Image (cartoon, rainbow, N blue to C red; front, side):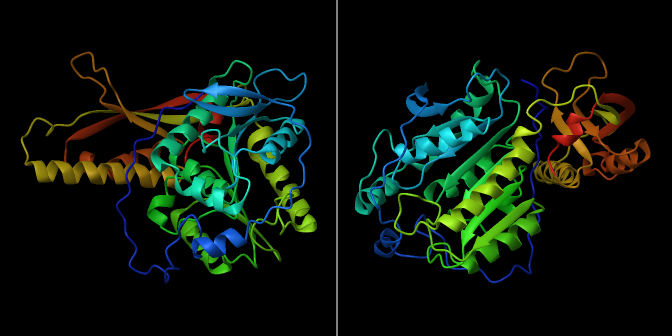
Length: 386
């Protein structure tokens, strides 16, 4: 699978003028458990028969639905169930995505259990180990790229309610994700945490949702803007869980329009570029970082840590502005003048020289850089973090 080197970056900036915070968000939003359960009454409507198959991902199982007669590479989407679990309705959503041309992988964060009423669903949701759940999500994300039936070059994630919150969490944890869809899930309004997101995000919300109310969506939008993340929000005059056809609050008109938005979003960010155009090329500036004149001088540990933190923050800032496609240290350093790290700039050589000169480790004489122009594929810049 084509991929870039991982970007090592840390951000230390803290804003003093943050907007007023909404009440702390839990998996139940701003509601208590009893009120949250009332938002998820089932109507017992039956889903169409499933068309996919169950697959093993490590110690977990998931439902995989593939397009008919499709050959890899395929665009892939991780599908995350709402709080009732991986039931037949979620499998049907995966089948709908497969009919649209995606390899849809519906994961199970409840270990094979499916709730039949809201009290059971609440108990299953509360029992989820968040560290294990995130590991399972990352394994599913990797499965889409590695499985020989799929070999996805571009991957997205989609989830509802409980799954919508986890869709956002996967976007924060997987820098190579290409798109994330969040249906009325638990949100994050801390810009520093959101800066990790590289994928464009589509948020679907109901203006009459008491679990994820409009004020929480407003705070999320502000935080995403401050973090420099790409976000599209669609709001509907509807209640929580309005897109669940088996739920008592299902709103057909709002759900149909939201699905149209989701299809267009995934087609733009996941399907349209399932295979990068390897023929399109452009000029980059390749910077080889080497030892500076003062690298051998002894300095105290506090100064060393401060310079390193500032160096990483400088890299992170360049990445957010789209000035570099990737950055990273070298694990092997042969020769008398070894390359310690590399940067691939998307700007002109003159601009790259200026940016290198601003690096704290370069200013301190601990690093120096040798810059050369390099002709490479356009998709490196297109996949670069922003």
